[in-house]
Image (cartoon, rainbow, N blue to C red; front, side, top):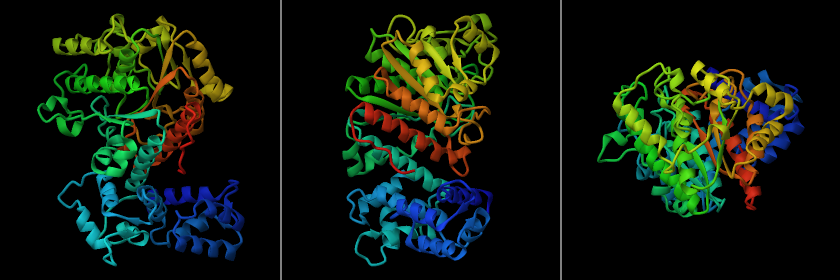
Length: 506
């Protein structure tokens, strides 16, 4: 059994081991199977019941040995869950359109082997009734003639559908996608939200659910290659080494700022799903456009301070510069570069993206959580302007709610608050799917508790999640973790906005 498969099955064991004593009992199995009803396939559930009733208790090692003998156990659970999500009319069957939704969410194949809807329908529809039953759907990964999907692919599909359908249930929330990975040092962050593309466009039911709620950035304009926001389109090189790909990024950011402003002007709460953190500056600019006369505060939850400029950057990666843009802080006292004229021009344009006189954000209205990996130029800025940093140790010592409350108290004088959450704020042991993991970060439950507390505050007007890179997370643990955090935030917003709770089972 591969390492990733063993880890996945070990995680499944943990779901049954309710008291975390290293063994599962018949009582625990029955309790969990009640929750898994309709998700875990009946054959696997029956086999597990037989095992545990025969042995009385089952250790982790015995469970792993048994599980690897069960064909399809790892994928069947998620496939059942996906079936429930995509079967939007609860008919118990997939129509052709519903099968098209599944295909629209799959990553593109590297060759011409991507199956068509009609081709899959023909191969899977064993009884030729024009629909796909649950059993026929499970053949997608069991059958060599079906879809070749890894467990990570299935988890990404689940995460995408949960985000899309659960957000659509909150009438006061708008989901904004900013598909850009050019600001990061490692390509692929944009793929964390790329699977949302096409779902609204290609499927009538999801389009109906999401009308007015989902705003999508189109990162590549056919008329100009400079508007491409994915590294796969523009390559690794850049003519602006001190702000790499600034031309392409600035065009995407201009669109993103407009989307955020439009979402706010429609009376919606924007949840921004971003590829890399560079475009967070456009989120701040969009808030400023929508509320030009109000004072904005920012709570930045991240391993990094992200307040460099082309004058100070050690890497040239723009995901380290969004707060330098938003605060118009060049930090010339710590300059180590003399950027070219094109970089200077684009940099000034980005700093003016909010459409107001002066910076979109004051340095005095910024506070950090979990920042622990900074460079000397950033340290100088934090010290000179007394910008608070609530470290992981403080969160752990005083509690996540106290840390969140300290942020809100520090920003007492502001009118609106933007919360930006970079997944590398999490500890590197669980944060596998980001290009910049750093030890000493938050645990998932701490991050979720902080976000729940912050999002309950009526001044918080926008929440952003970024830097999820599935290409770096081979078993896709971060997608599962981030989905739990995402649902926790949605539940807090639902309570605040007086809407029904929308969190779905993870």
